[in-house]
Amino acid sequence: MARQLINVPAKVKRGQVFEIKTLISHIMETGFRFTTTGDKIPRDIVTTFSCSYNGEEIFRADLYPAISANPFLDFFTVATESGTLDFKWAGDNGFSETASAKIVVE
Amino acid sequence: MIGIIRDNHGQDQTSCDPTRSHARRLGWQPRGDDQARAAIRNVVGEASVRKGRVDLEVPPLVENGNTVSLAVSVDSPMTTTDYVKTIHVFNEKNPQPNVISVHLGPRAGRAKFSTRFRLADSQIVTAIAEMSDGTFWSASADVIVTLAACVEGI
Image (cartoon, rainbow over all chains, first blue to last red):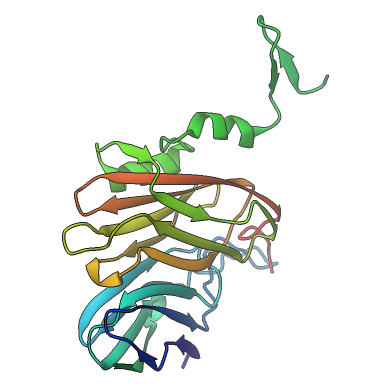
């Protein structure tokens, strides 16, 4: 269970553009490093992240080994209706995590 | 005068500074090393990439290449008819040319995102945005890295 941090404003005005910040704990092993005995450390990264607002996808990112450990993403969306924001991470070795946040639109 | 070749016109050409020559060659066109160029071609196809509309925020001098802040914003009204479809970020000297590809839509409201990434060497970072009308816009930034990521053992 990877730890996630989600930052979404609790209340926003209708039509307002608001910021969403997400972070998940993950090693993001590049697959380009070697151990002291010369063995290659296999790649283990988060490959995709997506965010949907009441079921509709509003943001998606394809991540590569160049993204730092504990991938942080900060993006925006327009407040339409009150509801939930669902976050999904997927990666190597069957990595899959979800999170959700409630949003109240006034 | 080590590393300086004087050509016929009396201008100095430094042969020991690949970053500068890359900067000159890159200009606004996606022309990094072959790998980066191939990765950009893969995304852009035969379309031309124009410089502008994209704002790439990367610190010019980085102490630790393991976490470098990156923010990309694109000048776009983000309406249902005119919006940013995708933003790609490329580098030229990491083991892989891709950094991130972000897919947006009119519901994003603002074409902006930020994240943190790794840099294996001092190099040029390029962001390319694909608009809903099929045009491509780009911005590049020079980054100097003192402690590189990716290459160290454990």
